[in-house]
Image (cartoon, rainbow, N blue to C red; front, top):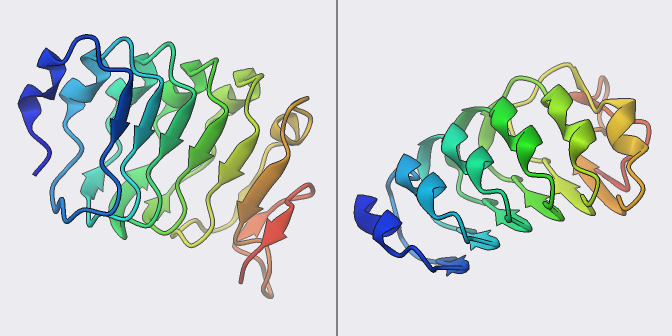
Length: 158
């Protein structure tokens, strides 16, 4: 379990807890760690919704929540406030809904990976394709019909 007392680590800049067996929810208190620049919780059996408090992390550059398998719900609109975000890896979960409109504000976004989720009939907004620094967009844009419409994806999965 990821402890709810995590917010007592006020100076924490990197939270690297990948490849563990944390079968728990991501505590909303993580949004109180104002100095966080990198969160990597890749490859844990995390469950529940993505906490909107993650969108309060003003200096976050990398948010890696891939291959957890049990994260569900939609991507919070608050993620559109992560102005310095360079990498957002959400692949291999059960996410649904739409890509928040605020993603067009993520001027430094370089990698967006959302394949292997439960998205249905969504479109990657052209404003994301037009981001100056975007190099990698991967989604479930292959298949007939594709579950994700994407005119600029660099990698398509069925």
